[in-house]
Amino acid sequence: MSACSVKNLPNGPRSPVKVNSVIISRALISREVQNHPAPTPAAAWKAATLALVVKEALVQEVKRLGISAEPVADGAGRRETEDEARMRALVESEVMTPEPSEDECRRYYGSNLARFRSPDIYEAAHILIPALHDNAEAYEAAREQARVLIEALTANPEAFDNLARLHSACPSGKVGGNLGQITTGQTTPEFEAALVRMKAGNISANPVETRYGFHLIRLDRKIEGQVLPFDVVRERIAAYLTESVARRAQAQYVARLLGSCQIEGIEIPSPGELNVH
Image (tube, rainbow, N blue to C red):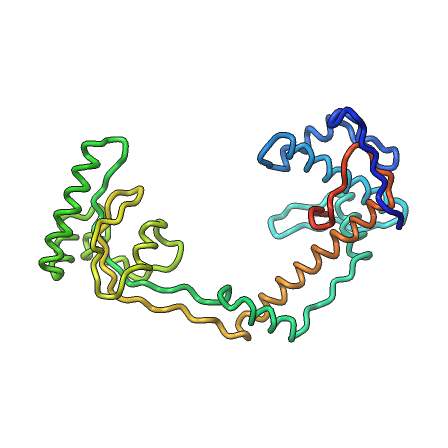
């Protein structure tokens, strides 16, 4: 295919955008912008314009090749339009995606072991002293109460369960503050960071502040996560590699297709920035 021919007109965004003389109207771009969240309106406009340019190029190629396809529905019940079905069929017919080999999957596994590690498990208890930032006096009173409880626990760690029943605003206070087993993402970032720093058997030396208030934490046990065996994650790796290769191949195909078109009014980015979905 020929090199991409792009004509940048002097009026920037107001210049007509064309694909092989077919104009993509500003009204159409304006409607498409909502589907492309971006840091700035200009970036959203550019992304929407590029998406419509790609779509128009695909539609024209579908017509040129006489591609037909039956629309299908996804798992959520959303059904393709006829144009979407034909564009999908075009890309599927033009882009071959090889299945990753066993060796490729094993190499990826060996280079990314951290991705296949089960999360650490913490068995912990806490005492929650509630506090809201919008009441400075009450907030400082809660901080002082938490500090006093820390001093009491430093002198007598065995009192934790009883103090949780008496003072904790969390429902877990009824069972001595026991939270059971906790894994990554189940608590606030501050609470989780405190657990990571603690050693089993210890009580936090200082109150841990979160959006809920002040926590006094006791870490009873930590179970280190383990790297999952290759056989357990092999299918997940294969699916990821297949999807990754497919996206690159599709982007390269679209880049070649755009290269054969007469594009006006927008610069065509590299294949890595193209999206056919």
